Image (tube, rainbow, N blue to C red; front, side, top):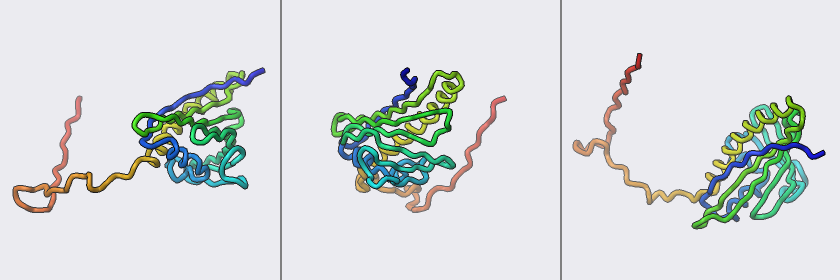
Length: 183
């Protein structure tokens, strides 16, 4: 009998070629450097990339172990996730990279979770999938920030004095904002 699974797909476009996005994903043990949600990550396996590579990630009090099951540079990375509550069963994240327009990359992160046939397990799995969906959004935002081209300070407007009429370089005094509450 086939395992019943649920999934959620999250997609974003990042301002970098697929090879640049892949380089961040392929540094498998360094996910904590670009996903603020993850406090610590490290490689547990003898090798740091390719099928069979294993990393440990720490998210608050929860420790997850992620094992690469698919490694197809620069298009697809998939890993199994262990360490979720036992009632949840298995989970998997799959990153898919596709060339976008103007040198960008369309990145889809698919999270799959075993929902089983037990109604209680299905309910718990759906709640876990909701939380993992939020984590996926944070991971996509982290990847986008990690591959974003650095900003050029010469492109920023020059700072002008706030009090031009006086020629002072001091900012104007702050005035408290007054609000009224509706009845």
